Amino acid sequence: MRYILPFLLLVHANAFAAEMPVIGIGKDKKTFVLEGSATRFNPLGFNYDHDEKGRLLEDYWVEDWKKVEEDFAEMKALGANVVRIHLQFGKFMKAAAEPDAAALTQLAKLLALAEMTGLYLDLTGLGCYHKKDVPAWYDALGEKERWAAQAAFWEAVAKTCVNSPAVFFYDLMNEPVSAGGKRTDWLGGAFGGKHFVQFISLDIGTRKNHEVAKAWIDQLAAAVRKHDKKHLITVGLVDWSLDRPGLKSGFFPDKVADSLDFICVHIYPEKGKVAEALETLKGFDVGKPIVIEETFPLKCSAAELAEFFEKSKAHATGWIGFYWGRTMEECRASKIFQDAFMLAWLELFVKHAKAMQK
View 1 (tube, rainbow, N blue to C red):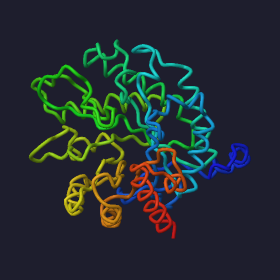
View 2 (view 1 turned 90 degrees about the vertical axis):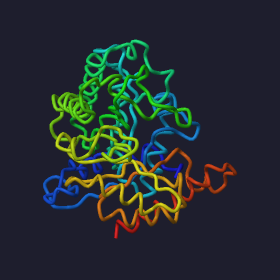
View 3 (view 1 turned 30 degrees about the horizontal axis):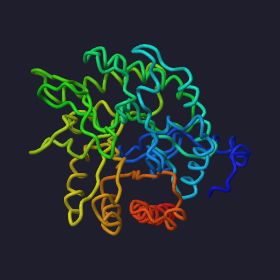
View 4 (view 1 turned 180 degrees about the vertical axis):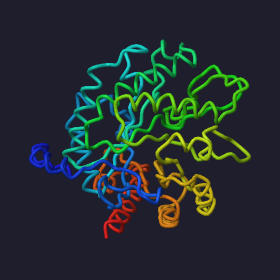
């Protein structure tokens, strides 16, 4: 939908904003509703984490703002009501207690765009996806000082976002880990050149993993609440956050849920293992709404992901996949292998979106 021009969005800006009430938790404690009503809200949208060139949003949202406008219009046209934005710590903080005013101004501009298009935002923070963009002074901080810097980040973001009707929720960090043992690097291994997993401690000592996780959540949530007491707060959990044999993040949902408004989990079903993915999802059902914040036919077919979508409704109330700036038409015309995966996903998304709107 590249032909949708920014001025058309501006014409309807006030109308969209007026139709964007705050999203709250339903009386059943398992669903979302529009504030002031019993109208259910089912989140369905995209991670807008990078473009087709692999650039993170902050790499192009100033010089190539028109692309951001076009991409938001395209995501809306596909049937999305939520867009997940990944904010990089290094782009928003000049020093441990000094936010970058220019970055916050650009964030405010993004909020206005979301209001114009009628898209709610999942604002995920503290990203360190490109290691080269992580400030040396940040890596040198001890745990206490690092948490304080992260709290300063969230104070600045919440202060900027508090009055925007487009804010759905704040995701304190993408895939945090509070693992035992001693480490020298705050970041997990890279995937596709990006570091998505991040450690909140290099050495938890005699503390329990979930105790460290909860203390960290509480400190950052308190920073948000200094300025914004109405929008929801959560954390983007990896699927290995359950307290069971094997790899564990330490963010056990049953242990940290009291500090969160709802649960976000990232699940990529594997080929022939949809039932296992559903069993994992069930483990995150701790009496609060569940949003599958990341999913994609990365390890399975589109048909298997469609099956996962349908059966996951027993526990989840929201689904967020990916959009990287290529339209369905562009993906169809492309000869790049990855675009075939994206096309299969977008076709599934459109079908799912239409079904939910009935």
